[in-house]
Image (cartoon, rainbow, N blue to C red; front, side):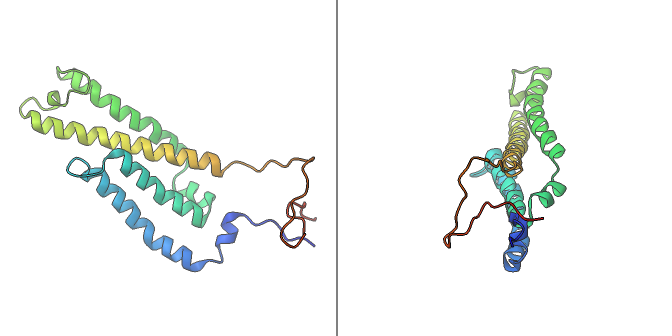
Length: 173
């Protein structure tokens, strides 16, 4: 008799300590991502790093609680919308600076009374667009790889585990 194949999420259900630690760590990971995002113009960080950290929080959630649970929190449509939104924020900032009389991505034009404030505002908006795009791309790549199905090759040799038992045997009825 063979046991039904275990999915990664079913294997994680018995690891309650890992689930509790992940539940406690994920909010701090996301908060740190926001800190890196909005502190990026004053210190190390910025949109790319913040997007990677933010996506890592959701990827950790998917690894511990399963891909389906992660897709319920951040659906595929939200990820796809984030991809487009980030690019639109970036390009829209450039177009807005042109509409205010400057060149593309000329942040000084965003605030004609205080160019320094315009530069600060432009960098914040651009970095936010980069962060949204990077987080969305990383989640889209993770969803694409984690959601793919295993393809069985009927001509493949059976895989044997350390005890000589067949690993890739079809489950019984």
